[in-house]
Image (tube, helix red, strand yellow):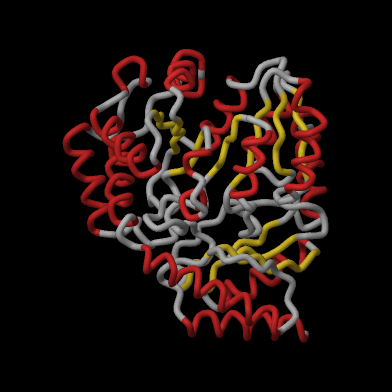
Length: 380
């Protein structure tokens, strides 16, 4: 007889399977066209990035072997932070092992019991989960609805010691983004602390790839920038950047996410720094990536597929039913095309979708083949 714990867990898994929501780990390393990866510049196999990782590996070893407050903070980490600060025009910064940990650290330790956090309704799970567990009050404004954000600011600003506004730049499941200039204007009227997650904006936006805030000219207005090393920067880990020395010192002293983990491996730091230097000189490539994605959007709209009309590298094709999303994903996979079938709870109910993540290696013939396969599935 199975243990009651196993029975309960298996029942929940069975329910997910029945509704098309069961997730499994798959080895998918042989596809001819990978449009699920966030390696937007195809740098994870770039010779300079591999050499950056190798150089750090040979000099510092495969692991930092300690937390950053013991002996785990190495020259390669300090050098990478310096490059990130110069790139993003901030004076202080920290590295974290993952983007999830970086967001969790910020939202766990900075807002207090007398504060309020206003977050976009579709904010990343790393932020939403943290807010749900802490004592700080939080409210979600409608996705990208800055009128609603202003309404909440007007109603609540004077009732709290500090108000935080948290949003992503480019949202990972829709490829859409807010008007950051409008948010910066609201900040002048209601001086909140602005946390901007540039995980999917970095590299693809801005004259030096610095992100959507750089492209829209509001970097100086953002109080805290978060981003990952595992997407355009082709490595792993994350960063937090700010002009506030106090915030950095506070996180160093109070953030368990930083203090109690063996620090980021030197090869990851070396790879990210090499990728950063390439991206700063790659804005023609970035524009081409977005142009290819935009061309795909136009073909989708021509054939009456539901998508979103934003100039980014992420293109969703919304099909609604999770089983349909899986079926369509598998049809593409049969032809060597790998895309993500994204289902609840990652996205809202009835909005299951294929997520196409465009990168520098996507060819025109691949786009045409995808459209043909999507349309043949729709006609079945």
